[in-house]
Image (cartoon, rainbow, N blue to C red; front, side, top):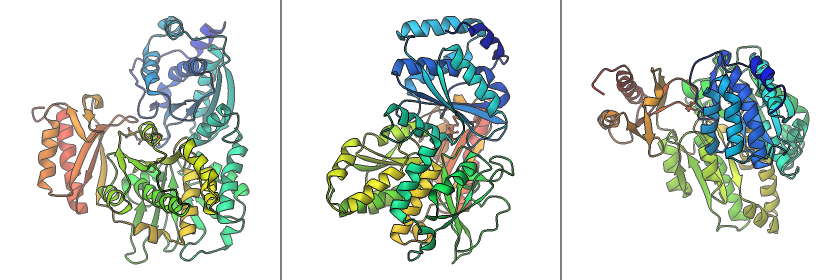
Length: 534
Ligand code: G16
């Protein structure tokens, strides 16, 4: 450790006696409670970098959570989320006393036989939260305490950090590890697919204009910077671009959970809208339907179906049919989407627990894995074998496929890349958002949350579709669901990013769905506060 370790530690001392665990996507909490965690994770990043002998990434963000929260995501060498086997180490180091810290780190170095002479290279980025600059300094202190080398990306989206980590670790084969490199890679691929003057060319029902709700976050800043690289290929208007409060009544999470347009936005028929979340790793599309005049939303499920059906068609036109193309979802996937994938698209679909780390891992097992959470977090992975097969293919469509692959940020869900992918597909199909929406009709659904004393009393199994503990809770949920008849379901799970238990319900009408969600929420509440005998 660095000779100034104690000095850096005292700058970032632990003043809060509260247990905090590595959750769905790293640490999340009120920003004022995170200083010591950031410092310790900076040290941990240097150790991880030495173990894997590669560049590691750190992103300071609480993504979709409110402005006053913050958090940290750790990124492994291939640009994927931190290896789950290190999550318990993170939680341990985050919760010990300052006095135990150095000994614990030395023990970890010994146990894992970490070669401290290896250069530890850590790439770091942060979002626009007012607390992010201070917390980013704490991470840098940690990297310095661990004698690591910092590569500071400053204000960036989460997916830009994931992208850059992979670029560094592939000797730039994946792309140039800079923000400009990111913009150029995606823009070049988009322009190849859509034409330099794509913004002037209407393709059947496809109109080349989008309105982006930037959630008042980093995504708004970055898409504006990217416009100069996209040139004339797409018309982009950005709203909620930083003048308001981050994620407040806007952004992908608001639109998805509330099932309505961002506040103060008057939807116009014929326009295509989309929302990013606070760190631009999620995307949700929406519009005002010409026929019924209502708000309609196209979430991660509909995005996955659009992408998978497009890839299936392209693969068939280049005559590569013996490919394992699958879709990965979570329990939140709308029943209509799963039904469509299995029975109309006839593709295999896998259900895994919440968290892109789980979806990404399952997708990598396939030749092509399309993964999306219903909340709009997802991407596509292509195995090297598949890319090589496409490269060897002489059919002219293979070039289109290769450009498409270049447009995808394969490391993680990326709202900017996903938007360009979706726009390219809609143009290629000559479809409006309404045409896309007609693929299938979502079952009415509702997401709500209940604040409880200790969310971790609930444990789940079967990819979070069943409660394991407390014993008896699942029976109560089953009995409630049974009252609502076929095509009804509900599940509950502890959030990994907020102090809450999430409740999901789906049924045949919105009234039934809302009532089902409320009934299940009540048994969760009663369980948490000792009512009802659980
Ligand atoms: C994170 C994860 C997502 C997850 C979401 C909600 O998103 O990356 O995979 O779906 O949290 O998780 P939970 O329901 O456990 O709170 P983000 O966009 O906030 O980083």
